[in-house]
Image (cartoon, rainbow, N blue to C red; front, side, top):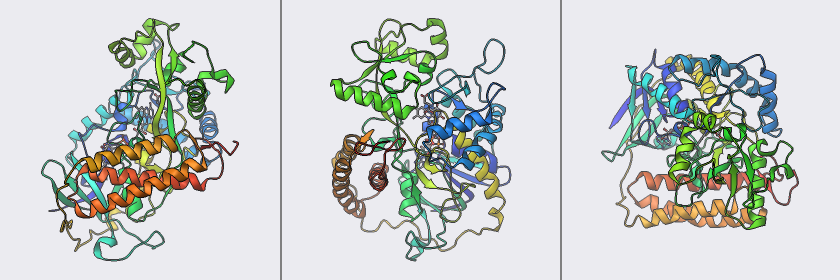
Length: 519
Ligand code: FAD
Ligand code: SIN
């Protein structure tokens, strides 16, 4: 079955939804998303969205904080662009109906997180992402030009390769004509043709065994682009959030927002001693790479399973008002934050690298844009500043919308695209072949390619992943595609790219910390 739309947007987080709303006035948009329409990393964002909001703050300060966090690897031009345009994009979110908390004086209540020199995080309690997602989806539903196809899993983008033309990563002029999409209700694979395709598939936390990301985050978009011979970069820069709730039976891990440390909570070892001052003069509010590494080190030295976040001294009323979601979660597990310290551990949280895009969010494949967490714009460099990613997603959704709508009318749909070829494939014999390999990838990545790395660990990880890659490619060739099979294929690809880029970077910088290289 073939369908056509001017735009095919893959992903319904802040990036995909914002983009769709911007181009839909003049063009038909198909928005495909693999789970429920609101399921996304965006939905779980807690802390908020960073933007220069008042005279106490300035563009320069936000730029400087972003550059400092990025450890010298940010693209300063992009940082300036995002910070400068960001405030307007946040105002648009408010116009679209997103609510952010206000203080008693009627001004927005601006929070502070690690690495920020000013209070500049707009938030809605500790469920900011859910509020943004709610507001955007309700606008999407009102739009006659946008068709949302939920439970539609994008398998691969369509290029010349599908017309029998050989392409490799050096081939000039690779073009994207749309994507093959599996309807996971009917189990039919649809050919969706588009003049312009937009990858907005988010992150890849599930490459690791412990992550704050919901289970949709399997790096599908980055893997699709890499398979289509598009370029990706900076994959070694995986951000581990220092404080996910330590609760081994829960996957994914529940996040304890950094804003709690901005509110005064302090990290302590199991014997109740503060330790962050040993590592950084900013203490518990140092940038996340430093805090995550410090926790990892304390856990390893002491042989403990976690550290604590001490909130017992904080104002109870203010805490419950600001962090009702976290308060309820802790209370549900029998942890009253005013009587007991909260056990926390680092967890994979955000991927700074991704699909290489230019300043207009164009990938290296023609007619394919990438926005949001799956894209690598140059904003984050070696480490993302907290709450800069929601901002980046809406800034680049806007830029990509403006840029693509100026050229889309010159683009023609591609004819003669073959439908998905399932010949020779059979139903998977045993799901265990997929689920066990998935666990192995996650264990390999967590144990060898985590917060602290070494040449030996990376080599081991590479060798083991190669075996899984070969086994899974053989399985893929002969098996009817399912989301689980595709996601396994994608996390193997993402794991491979993280290891490959990590091995190429012969230094410790930002989130990439190698034991044998000093920072
Ligand atoms: P997402 O919101 O992840 O959306 C991706 C979409 O793509 C989803 O709808 C998914 O289903 C869909 N998709 C993926 N693969 C496919 C496929 N193969 N086919 C079809 N659809 C597909 N950032 C901040 O700035 N501030 C915060 O406070 C903050 N807190 C966070 C808290 C948590 C717990 C987490 C996990 C992240 C947090 N982040 C925060 C990061 C931020 O939420 C994400 O970087 C951002 O939301 C990414 O938006 P996105 O639109 O790029 O991707
Ligand atoms: C948090 O609330 O601590 C997460 C913020 C972010 O990831 O940007």
